[in-house]
Amino acid sequence: MVTRASSGPAFWAGVVAAAAALAVLYAARSAAGVATPTELLADRFTALLPLSVFSALLSALEDAAKPTLNVALILGQLAAGGVGGVLFVRRVPSGPGLWLAGLVLALALWFMLGAVLMPLVDAGLFATAAVAGPGPTMTALLGAALAYGLGLTGLTAWLRDAAVAPTRGELDAAGGRGRRRVIVGLGAAIVLVGLGTIAWRVAGRVGGRAMGKIKGMPPEITPNEDFYTVSKNFADPVVDGKTWRLEIKGQVNKPYQLTYDELRALESVEQVNTLECISNEVGGDLISNAVWRGVRLRDLIARAEPQEGIRKVVFKCADGYEDSIHFSKALEPTTLLVHEMNGVPLPPEHGFPARMVIPDIYGMKNAKWVTEIRLLDTDFKGYWQQRGWSDEAVIKTMSRIDVPGPKRLERGPTPVGGVAFAGARGVEKVEVSVDGGKTWHDASVKPPLSKMAWALWTYEWLPTALGTFRAVARAIDGQGRVQEETPADPLPDGKQGYHDVVVTFVEPEQPARSS
Image 1: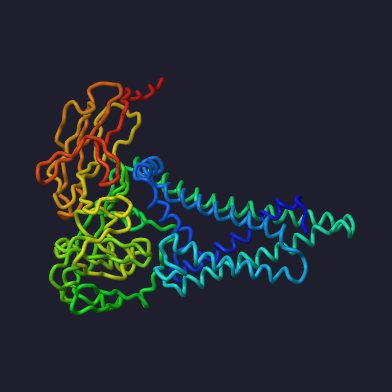
Image 2 (image 1 turned 45 degrees about the vertical axis):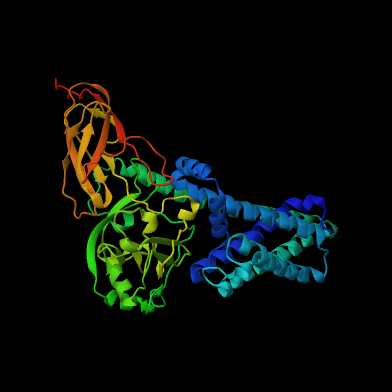
């Protein structure tokens, strides 16, 4: 029996074994699209949060919200694995039965994951309702359970071998202490590397956003690598275009499937369309513009011969995400199932092989990695709608100041510029105030590349005095309605309010006189 003094190394042995189990799960996620318990728990957690708490956390953490939740869940799983390591080391006797005990632990853990965790996260008893199917999901869970149970058994045997080292002399004792240090160090390194990776990802997003504010006006077409991405997943699916199939089904007379090549062979159209995330903050960068190419959704629907009384068209995705739009919206000629973005096949992070592009509604309903289009004669609430977000999700009029950023400038002609967007309503004009909203001036608005695209605008500011000023922008949509000034949180139907920047003008530096 290992003494109480071995609790520390035993805990870290459990952490290492739990990390091995997580590695198996994420390998299955990458190879077969099996959702990890971390993702499923995160989904369940956000669904149970009160809307007021969810909104407050989203506003406070912004881009860091999802990574923070996932880090907390991963650390919780590692800590649980550590506690399991202590209990295992203390309660399981040494001898030939040790490995049998490890196998029993693995099988018991696998049974508990299937019988308790899967129903708890709405994946069904033994993953019968899992997106990837019960077979792949339970196989991945079995691999993870074996990695934990047998990995912990091997580490326990190692620790116990080290614990009896004093009877073999001082050299062996030093070796035993070294083994314990290896276990502790390895466990700590796993935690630190995991935290460092998440911190790097979050810092990269936040840093990129800050840099974007000082680089000047954005291009009309956002390069693919700069186009914003938002996903419910910690690890997005990687879909094989060769095996991908799109099903069109539901209340239709002729359900059918398409391969990727068959989809690309259909008559396609090209359109410029801006996407914006419903959680985009005032002045935020969760908005981008691209040239999309794809098939009109109404053509795909017509081929299936929809029945009478259809209310909703539902999109199911490779990551388990689901959302829907009204049937009338699905029949609009600008609603597309796209397969190209800016002249190339959709990048994986933007929904390869196919995603929806639906003008006038926020990005959450422009589903990525679409595998199924289902027609229903009933209502349907998608992933985010079940969590309190708007089902209509109509884009609000917005404007953003990209130049100048908040800074000190020499007094002189100063361009103010940015983007404005009002969905399918279009932007009629943009107004700029350089005195905090007391007076307004018309900006020059460049005609957008399409009625579904953002508009770039500029205003030439000629400051007449030194000091600090607040520049404010507002847009007027194509129906003559002024952008909402009253601030509102993103939940449930999008952020609103005027964007402003504070600029301080100083005297221009005088060139030094030569003697």
